[in-house]
Length: 340
Ligand SMILES: [Zn+2]
Image (cartoon, helix red, strand yellow):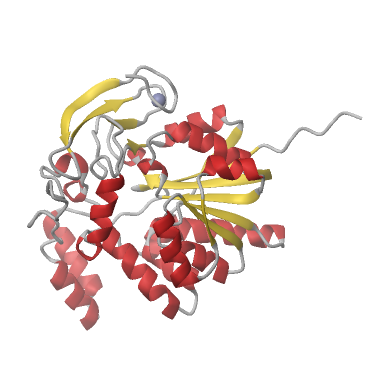
């Protein structure tokens, strides 16, 4: 099986992985060329997303997106609100604000796969000239109803035809959902102004040990599991430079516990949705001590509670520059100056 990112012949490492919705099953391939894993077949997933959004309050991961879109308007700084929630938004906010400060001008941003629209809204509120882009007409209508006319329904490829360019394209937790990431990235580069950047966040395979298989969401919700090497490869092909965001400041100010047992993928033995598209009872569970942790937060002794729990369970608070979320920033090389 050829890798859809780099074209190398990939190796089958797992046969018949449980799909996000029963009874679908998928094979997992590992590409030694670019360090990516991908699931096969790349079956259409529209009906699956219909089921997820129909049950959104009960589907973890997606239910928190709904919460963000409902609560963000109450925040004094919408971008600070999001940045505090997750690594991806932290990196996006820090990097874009850094560019704004450095350039001393208004930065134009395309939020690719804007979904419910709250990140586009947060960037708009923070002074960026931002447009949200989504292929789903339904998503664009919902985002417009919540946050106003900041959105366009189109594919990246179609947008290239109409010719706008942007200082930054943000691909926040979306590239792992794409069936075909190579043409997506090629179109993204065409939409960049000279010196423009593509900021990509996605689950980080480089964070898992060598030999780990599909420690990410079940296919076809996630179709790819990329490593840092994947983006080094992509940058080379696209004539870009690549750097990786340093998350040290996030982990120093946020308590993140990472245990391999908490990671989905091969650890998830059952599909999350049944054949009718309804959540399977008992599959979506919170950590056993979820309520204890919330109570300790309310009572103001969360720090002590977590330290004792982690000491007993052998799990540790995570700290470091590169963690479970990868943030790759591709910079388009400035066009060579003509010799005079
Ligand atoms: Zn590859």
